[in-house]
Amino acid sequence: MALLEPAAPQDGTSYRPLSHGRETWLAQAGTLAMVDPEVIGYFLTCARCGCFMQAARRLNIKATLLRKRLAQLEEQLGRTLFSYQGNGILLSREGLQLQTHLVAQAHERRLPVIEQPLIRLAVAESILHDILGRDLTALLRRNASVRLEIISIDSELSLQSVDADVVLWLSAADSSAPGPGFVTQPPRALACLNYLPHIAKRYSRLTTRPDSVDDLADYMLVQWQPDQQVEALQPWNTLVQERLAAVVRVHAYSLMLEMIRCSACIGLLPRYMSCFDRGLIALPGLLAESMQRRVWMAVNADVRHPQEVEMIVELIVSTFEGRRDWFD
Image (cartoon, rainbow, N blue to C red):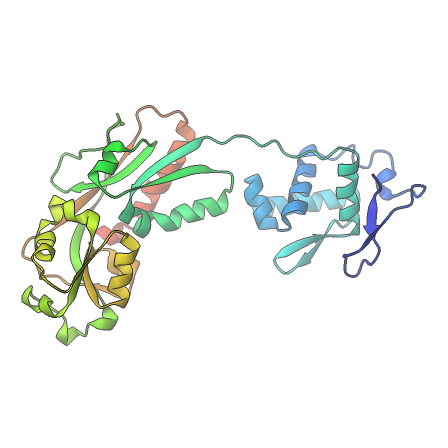
């Protein structure tokens, strides 16, 4: 296989074969012999990804460390291998030669793909959407090699039937924490949630805001259907069930939030929602009875990958600790 070099280096879009009789810097004895094979793998991953950040995620190392190792490679070879274009990277002429040489000589030493353990995380849907979603996204941005299955729990039936390594669920605040259907380590209470009707600020002035059940007659109510079976939320559920008009029931949690934000509906949400979305405001005092639920976390008693599971547990605990003011 012939080595390739740019015919028009200024745009890097056209190539011609190197002359077979022409020596290149790569043909010199020992040019690559002293290079760490791991660094060669770093170089090839960057060449494929065209982005330091994506390559770092693929390799599960920090981007700063990756840049440092590749800078050392350039210094060791005495060549510039990359050029920068915005947030991406392009191979220089020497970088293209190195990449082609490794392929041609069958010396492409890809880092071995190590199978990552699959960790199953089951979470109450509202908790996943409001509290954990952002931190889980941040985890995946940092580490693209994680294998994580996220299971949404929206009812007691789904909690009983789920099979996972880590489970977060909601129960009545005064219950003894009935958990999933499999054996777990002792469950841990993470937070107590108070529930209140909410409305979007844009649709409610302070002077006209409803402050009694009778005032709700002028508003449409929206209910997330899974909450209909929750005994702890019975005061609200009774109010919705008695409605003969101006009520909408939805099966998607995100759709309920959208209807509150954009359709002047009033819906039942945890009190922390005004911290999560500054455009929503709670309406205390509408219902005489308080509505509370507790967030529980438990780890499967039969954990096969304790280190990876502990990483998820630490993330969850840190998330709740960091939002402690949401629940106080």
